[in-house]
Amino acid sequence: MNITSNMAGNVWKITVAEGDKVSAGQDVVILESMKMEIPISADSEGEVEEIIVSEGDFVSDGDVILKLKQ
Amino acid sequence: MQQDILNKKSGHDQKVYEKLDEIKTKSNRPYYQKLKDQGKLFVRDKIKYLVDEDSIEIEDGVFARENDEQFLPGDAVVTLIAKINGRKVAIIANDLTVKAGTWGVKTIEKIMRMQELAEKRMIPLIYMIDSAGARLNEQFDTFIDRRHAGKIFYNTARISGNVPQISLVFGASPAGSAYLPALCDFVVMVDKNASVYLGSPRMAEMATGEKVSMEEMGGARMHNQISGLGDMLVKTEQEALDATKRYLEFMPQNWKETVPLSESIDPLPGKNIEEIVPANQRVPMDMYAVIDRIVDADSFFEFKQLYAKELITGFCRIGGRAVGIVANQSKVKGGVLFPESAEKAAHFVSLCDAYNVPLLFLVDLPGFMVGSKVEKEAIIRRGARMLSTVANATVPRISVIVRKAYGAGYVVMSGASMQPDACIALPQAQPAVMGPEAAVNAMYFNKIQSIEDPEERQKYIIEQREKYNKDINVWSPASQLFIDDVVPGDRLRNDLINRFELYSENRDTLEGIADKKTVVRRG
Image (cartoon, one colour):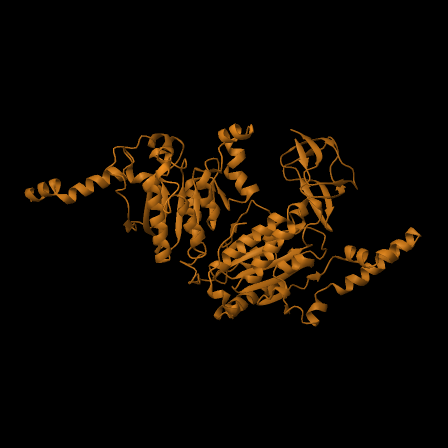
């Protein structure tokens, strides 16, 4: 399952690592956009399979940030 | 005695009762069992659930097509006047058990007559939608004339802003009839059952080759989350009917009246506003917690909860007074205004303005979204629609700067330049054209670029930001009288109660525009 960005911005912090278990609603990445911290959370629980982005990357609305294994 | 009964049985009156029984019962309907199996209510049971007991006063057109060769009770629609909490309402309800609720020649005439009655008598109109669309074998008598189906939409559009119009979408509302909810003020959709679309999946596949499910193309969830055609998603038909009663508590009978005051109820207990609002402007904050501190306990009724969540809209009571709230939610997308959120605000503001519900703006936003994507989505045009709607609203209007208020975002959130009755601020407020980072970068770009040593350059930037930061606090604009007052969080609710009372006493009718009705536009 893909977790995507909901708006354009820079990846400020990645708060999980590959292999981590995450719960539904948990923040996995914090973007910085419009001078605000934009937390991106997991829609459902799972295990972080792959992190696609690095801190400092620009992401557009809809870009895949990480992949979750259920 | 015996003779009386005999007379009654064979009499003229008795014939009416017999016919009414046949028309009103569900027991003779071929599709009733199917309906029941789907967990759906018979049309008259829905109406009964919604209205006060024994309050159905007038039902016109009940004998429509009674003489027809086919069995078409009421021509698949029930139109009547009843009461909800003692208030008269007009109801137009599709009957799915007759020809799948399709619109035949007399269905259309009945709908129009009830619309015209509601308009004349100035009472709210409730549409219960569950219809397969136009009845195709009658299409040549329902489409072209001045009093054919299109007049229903003409009426809905013209009535907008005269009396509240509510659409409850219980099932399908395809093709032309999709415009009916789209022209109403408030649209409730039942999850998994409601579907609104112009062309069915079958038609889409025929016309373009697209393969798509009904749910994906026109389902209730899609319309609530993505298209914005739905204002509320509910699980059951009963919930939709309950929501109607709740919504009507925030609506007057018509645009000439105001919602009566109710008893003031203390807000729910919880953290005080000072604790809720963080000083760090970058950090997301939950605006719902602030709303809870301001409104009467359990009075908040959210509007478009699932759509453009970076902006919260909803009705509430503050000290017993019905108020509409427009609030930035920095927990979602930083509270930034997007084309969708601007349109959501415009819809809600026009609705409150139309029916004399005062407005409260809770401001905490870094501005409108920037970038090529939103420009292509017409953020300027759609943002301007919000601005125009706010500027032309004639109801009492108070804006509270909760935290940040930057740029055009501040202006459209009914900032001081939008001439609200009051623009007040919490002590945490920081109104400015833009945040310190962007401002320093814009003002000193050349100077910054000219400093070659990176450390020196960074030092210069930080110095300038601190200097700029000193000016964006609440005390400079308060001292200059740009804002009307600085209100501590623990006094905010009382301050709002007093101000709304004062501003509601009489209206300085902006060059007479308050005397004109406001059409509710959804987008």
